[in-house]
Image 1 (cartoon, rainbow, N blue to C red):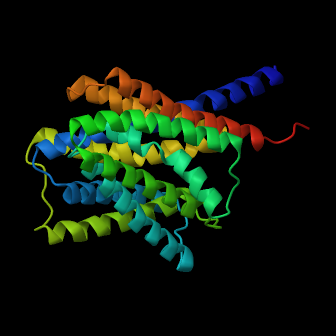
Image 2: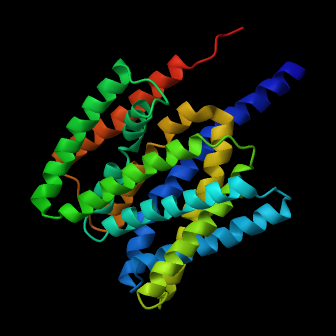
Image 3: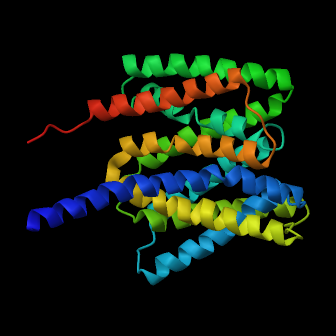
Length: 304
């Protein structure tokens, strides 16, 4: 009877972890749809990101305060604040790219970041670069060539460049964040990152004439969904899910994110995906999954 109870608890834990990461991927994957709805409502990029990060920081800050979590201090606080500035920059690249390219293409180009992380980690001496990394890079480059070929035909190179810039900055963000030797609670540190990002975009919006708010109910709903579902919920589900299933499986399940973005773009924004773009996207996602699986096997603990 006891063994049955333990087995049931383990099964629930193993089921809940992937579900939370999938929910997180759905939240992050929905960002482009909500952003386009607000853009159609007259909201600019800096205003949208300022309100997104402010609302998300307010909710997460309340959660951190009520749960008694310790905020970072001293050098840790400064470090996470700087990460917030970097996060503000990569978010600006992603949301700005949506003005020039389809949401699906932007998401797929940004999702080159797992391979970029492997390359940068090897160049900086943080990690090795072996056969698996080389194969993933080759497959990713081939997929990118197919995607960029379609983007070039569409004549919107600005969207491609901004999306690749966002993916590159995200790779740097991950590398810097992973090097922090800190015992700070992840939700508390995320609050600092979101707040710093909000302040950056508030400053940018003020330079552009002030924050512009949505003027329709649909615009406000999209903004609240972006801050709540695609920010607070997505971050919390990702962190809790990763603790349950580990980084390798989390990386694999997270490839659902660009798939969600592409699907929503086709369903609600009238976007299309050619056969060449579909093949290229599968190669990019395949490179990310293959790299995650390879690294998971290489670092798997020996069974005792």
